[in-house]
Length: 128
Image 1 (tube, one colour):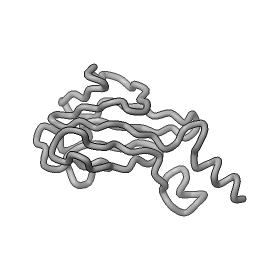
Image 2 (cartoon, helix red, strand yellow):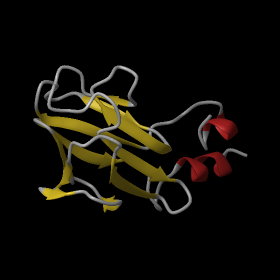
Image 3 (cartoon, one colour):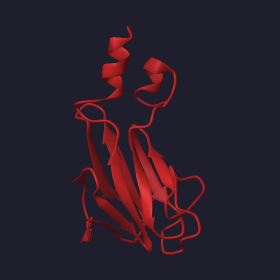
Image 4 (cartoon, helix red, strand yellow):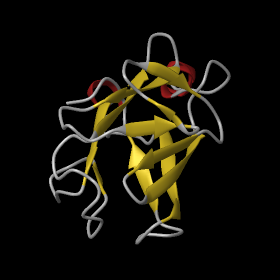
């Protein structure tokens, strides 16, 4: 159960990855609080099916930290590389609006929903 799901009963979206190049052009992938595993397997949080250049399991990970309201990308557990704005990701790196992640032949643009200005914790406090 996610960080916000405990307080509001659902797992609200915290951001999106949108495919700008590859088999899923124009499709969006919802990000949740915590770790979002990216791979081509159907069991991944972000499942980029049909792109054999993307590892099946945990090619990369996008993390949303609800305490600092920041997003990070980090390499997954595969031998394949992930790129942030055309630079290889070898350790956790902060990602921001319109950054581009490249995994194999797929490019994804990052669109955050949550930040210090808006986050689900603020909304749940207002409704208490």
